[in-house]
Length: 113
Image (cartoon, rainbow, N blue to C red; front, side, top):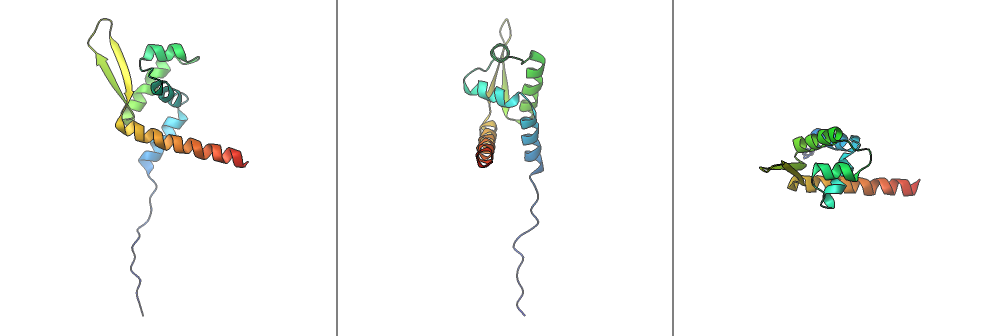
């Protein structure tokens, strides 16, 4: 009798990546912040002024969470008054491509309904 080799192991869901997507998509403002950064708006005060309903407190919470995930980077300048800017990291660019794919999938789902 011929034996078949097992070449595959049990597939496990990417739990850390899934939690990141869930946290970012669950945040009301993360996608808006990415859009602002895409347009070159990288200072928190300008972000708050450009988006109705966005408060400084909520913005800072959202930015902090994205920094912890490694999606955004914060640069502080030693100036008076203090200046802070945010930018998308290399990992963040890859992550945003995943979000773009999810958006395209969502659009496809809506068009098939």
